Amino acid sequence: MDFWERYLNATPDSEAKKGDRDTLVPETAESPNHSDQTFTQSADVQMLADQLLQSGLQHQQTGTWDLAISDWEKALIFYQQIQQISGQIQVLALLSNAYYAKGDYQKTIEFQQIRIQLAAEIGDRTLLGQAYGNLGNAYRHLENSQKALEYQQLSLAIAQELNNPRLEVAALNNLGLVHKALGNYLQAIECQKQSLKIIRELKDDLVEAQILRNIGNAYHALSDFLKTIEYYEELLACARKLKDRRLEGQILRNLGNTCHAIGNYPKAIAYYQQRASVAQQLQDLRGEEQALGSLGVVYDALGEYSVAAQYYEQRLKIAQKLQDTRLMGQILSSLIVTCNALGDFAKVADYQHQRNALLLGNVSA
Image 1: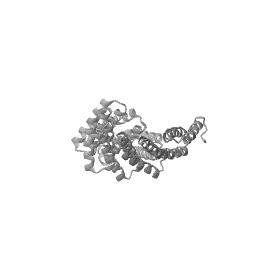
Image 2 (image 1 turned 30 degrees about the horizontal axis):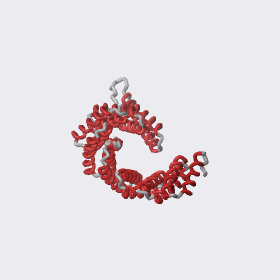
Image 3 (image 1 turned 90 degrees about the vertical axis):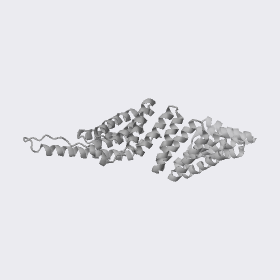
Image 4 (image 1 turned 135 degrees about the vertical axis):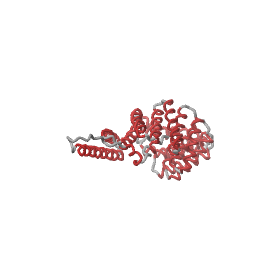
């Protein structure tokens, strides 16, 4: 998980404005009103840039990203024209974030490099550390691990130099993600455990949840399933504290899958049942049918075929609601195998008929 976006605007405007530069106007006797005119023009440009910035934010809220980007790119030109540093910094952050969300990491890099230039110009080490971290994230997504490692290490060094715990949390977490991408799972876990320790001191449950998930995923990549379960269970408690039902459902699924993988069927069943309940409350039909399917698979593995068939039948009803013929075919195949194991050949024939009708394109069968 990346969460530099959480800190993109961490530098307060009051600090950023220390780098603002006034428009230089020559004082000449021949043009006594030239200074006032230039000042007015600059104020007009500033107002236009601010309006474009706000317009972009409104487009962002409605999900019209292309319009938001268009407004922000125009605003950036105007802020650059009047050398308004704080406006440039804010718009560059928004543009970088937008292109990052769109998966255009080259554009993200382009805008972060401009932020680095501005940070050096105004001597803002915090901004520099943030920009290095964002560059590292973009390069990681481009699978340039060496550059990603280099920039995250620079970000971490600045965070420690400034004794900035927020910046250090982000740098350590993202450095861990680079190590994970390189296959250095133990180093990834070590970085993220350091990050976890700091964020717990800051009492930020949202970021703690992100880091716990990363650690759990790294242990899973190492096939250390007991440690995976330990961190996922901590994450589950965090999700419930945050009242994030969707995250809760995702982690219940992960816990169920991991417990299933190590043969702990009772725990797997408990987690899958909880996941099905959360999905029902969220009216998440996809989540519910997946949980029901997982329950069917576990009961099949236990040889409790009648219970497995019940879960598959519930899942089939949801697939029919979703009009997902591909999924319906898969569930019917599971039911055929399970009912065959039960010796219920009448149902086997019925489910075979339904599956054949699907193959022929008769969805209503």
